[in-house]
Amino acid sequence: MDWILNLYAAQPFWLWLAVGVVLLGIEAAASTEWLLWPAVSAGLVALISALAPNLGLPVEIGVFAALTVAATVLSRRLIKRVNPQDEPDINDRDLRLVGERARVVEAFVDGRGRVFVSGAEWPAEIEGAAPLAGESVVVESVNGPRLRVRPV
Image (cartoon, rainbow, N blue to C red; front, side, top):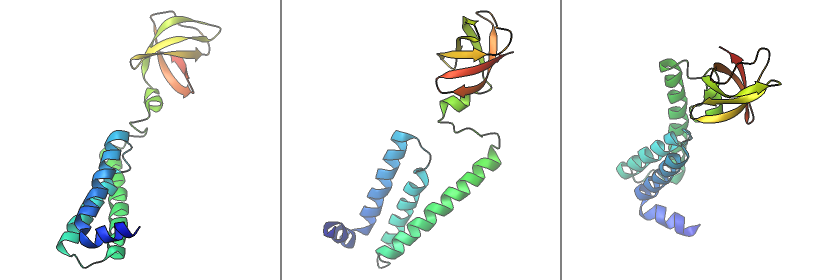
């Protein structure tokens, strides 16, 4: 732990910049959308520490936390205002399937069959009249690996 404090004392700018780069790298690999604003905040704290080197670690951590919370809250509000229909998480493939049109690839028998949607074949279930292979259905919900569909 002492080596981190010594590194911080010698180069606070580079330490905060490294934190930002690591967070940005994890965000790029995981695409969570949650680490983008902490990465940006760490970069801003790096800039602040370069311009005002005598703030100290506790103040910089406080500024980092405040910037992260403010940027995250403001970005969520902006996204809701710009795109109010963006309900499902764009990274959640299953939720994106709801409402999509699918093509029946294996006829339904006893309410179970297979459909092709979003570039993949899925097991599906339907209530009522079973469509024939080649006909279209709409995805109503996702239940684990199985889709619940309805006729178009």
